[in-house]
Length: 496
Image (cartoon, rainbow, N blue to C red; front, side, top):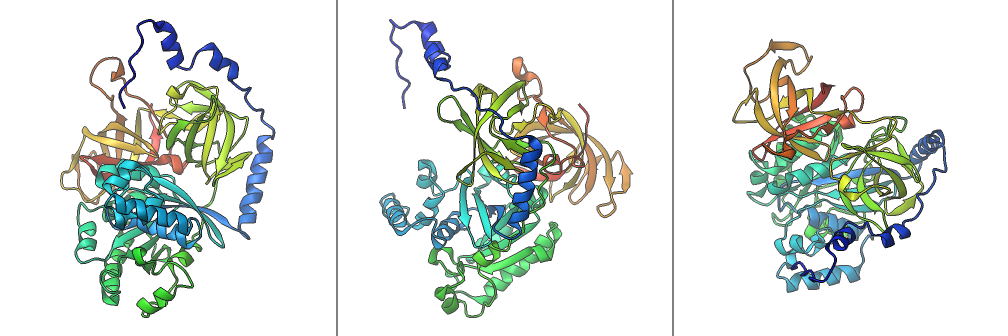
């Protein structure tokens, strides 16, 4: 859309003020910020009581859907939403008609999550879509992540908000092999989610209708993945496999006649059964609030919405919070979680906080919301223990990389190779190694680089993170180079 032409008769200073929402009319409409209604101790007690009650009722779990491009992730998510009554026949029919008109009829189920015009035109998930599914024993927040390698940063942002993962693989001839080969997103996604702390994975072997529900093909795919999941750090008791055909709706629900007819050889749990058995991790509600921002948008009135997952602590309406990096504070106007308004939220919840008393220019993806009295450390240099992935080009001291911390990604350098370590015991094998090659564990120093070489933006922007020993969620890092994830690890110490 073209930018409107400004009239020559207008007062330029008034136009500038209006553009920044600083005019007197806007200020007069600002509402007084809400007041804190509960003591922090009371909110923590309520959060603990809710977690305890969840042991008997529905437990909340966040799940990221991952896998190689075109494995059918969005289609499977759309079919799940339909099977669980999240969308009705009328909406499904409308998407079918609209996708046919666009020549994308095979993507109609994916339209339940791929909502932007560009995603629908290209037939590719580009951003992380969030949906909530109600199961008998679980309330699952689904994060449908993109599979295309161009959108790996978005996938990492989604995985950083998840407790568990649903890996979707394509059983079609040659397609599983393409995704599982070196450079395919199946391998990289598995390594990424495990490095970000995910310990439970469900593998949905999709598109079995293409191979006529061949049991041997299903078992071949499972065997290849089972070994890889083990070497990637997943315990075999926390990795489950299920055969599905998302397009046909086969393998999803417990009372599925299509499944019984097409796959009589499979007697195990359905996908919904497995989702309903996921175990939420321990939630640290007593630690200080830590919420990395995954999305920022304009809220109602003078508020700004920030979305993310609360990694630790609690937050309530009326509370004053600090946003780092930066010097700005804000007030929590309202809280939404699982599409419901809440007076407070605690660790583990995927929430939207509507903030007031802060200019939106001070809010950005990757920034962290925390209490003014317990700030997240800001680092431009830190030491980390990393594991090097299957790389072709060794890592040298001074290697330029892209650093990912939760939803934050910044340019950085591996400035020092301190030691290589024994992967089993952590004991030092060699001090000051010259290079790091694939499969090695090492202690390194990482330094954040400036985003440009000169000018006012040449100063390195510090990254909010904490040692892994203090906060596991805030102490994990990923390292990428040239569009490839080359290492992952944990923060040992913040240097400056």
